[in-house]
Image 1 (tube, rainbow, N blue to C red):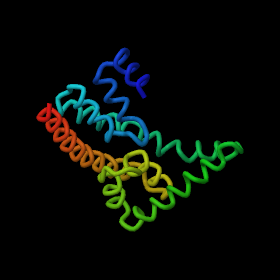
Image 2: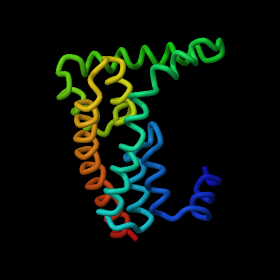
Image 3: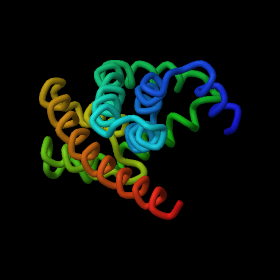
Length: 164
C-alpha cells in the first residue's frame, strides 16, 4: 500500500490521482473523492473529478463485459471467477429488475460496498437494459453517491482538523 501511495505522490498530481482512483472498480468515487479532499483539493474539484472518473468506464463496461466474460470463461483458470461474477450479478439483478431504471438508480446511488457504477453497469448488461436509459440512470445514481460521499468526506476531514 505504501508503494502505491509513494507512486501517486511522486508521479501524479492530486487531480489525476483523484480521477484515476475514481475510475477503479470497487474503489470508485467512494475512494477518489475522500482521497482528493484529504490531499487538499477543494470539494467541488474533488466532486467533479470523482464523478467524471467514476462515469468514464461505464459505457465500456456495458459494451464489453459480456464479451470479456465469454472469452474468460473459455480459459479453465478463469472459469470459476466468471461463474462467481455471474452469480453476483444475478443476485444484484434481482434487486434492480423489480424497479428497472429506478432500481438501477438507487442501486448506484447508495454508496455501500458492492454497489456503484461498475456493478450497476454490469447489472444493466446482465438484465439487457437499453444503453442510454442505463447510462442516465447510472449517472444520476453516481451524482447522488458523490454528494453523499463528499458530505461525509468533508465531515471526516473537518473532524480530523478539529482534533489536531
